[in-house]
Structures are given as C-alpha cells and as structure tokens.
Image 1 (cartoon, rainbow, N blue to C red):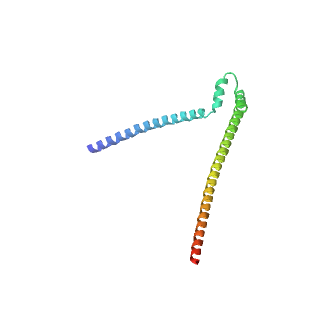
Image 2: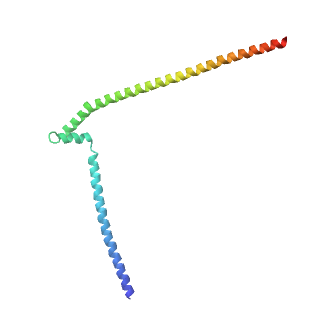
Length: 148
C-alpha cells in the first residue's frame, strides 16, 4: 500500500512538472512570436525606399505626400537618371576603348610573332638551299672523279 502511495505521489509530481514546463514553453513561444512580428515590421520599414525616406525626412512638415512623391519623381527623372545615363555612357566608351586598345596590341604582338616565325623559316630554307647546292656540287665532283 505504501508503494502505491509513493507511486501516486511521483506521478502527481511529474504531472505538475509537465504542466509547469508547458506553461513556461507557451510563454517562450509567445515571446518568440512577438519578437518575430517586431522584426518583420522593422524589415518592412527598412524596405521603404531610401530616397523616399530621405526626401520624406526633409519635406515631412512642409509638403503633403503627393507633393513629396512629385518631388521624388522630379529628382529622379531630372537629376539622377540623366547623370546615371551620362556616367554609363562614359563607362561604356572607356570599356570599348580599352577593349579595342587591347585587341590592337594583341593583334600587333601576334603579327610580330608570325613575322619572326616566317623570317626563321626563310633563313632555314636559304641554309637548306645552300646545303643542297653544296651536296650537289660534291656529288658532281665525285661523279667527275669516277668518270676519269
């Protein structure tokens, strides 16, 4: 009988411990969800355009939202976009010029290598001709000496 009482007391303690842990875990989950919601709302605010925030900061008290949007669009299309286009054209010209310069120098190097190769082949051909004529002359002298 005493062992049954001890067994029941242990089961009760375990049940109470599980209940306490469950409430603790649910409070941790709630806190975690609150933190996630705060992070998500913060990310949405951060994803707002940098130009919108900057212009909004300076014009918040003096202009209404449609006027701010018009100011932003005017700034982008009248100032930033032409400047960006100009810089991109400049970069494009520099890239094309660099590529053409590199190609011309590489082709010049290749032409010089080919000319050197042709020059050495020409010299080898000339020396080969000289050796051939020397051998022919030697053979002719042998032939003449054998005919006598």
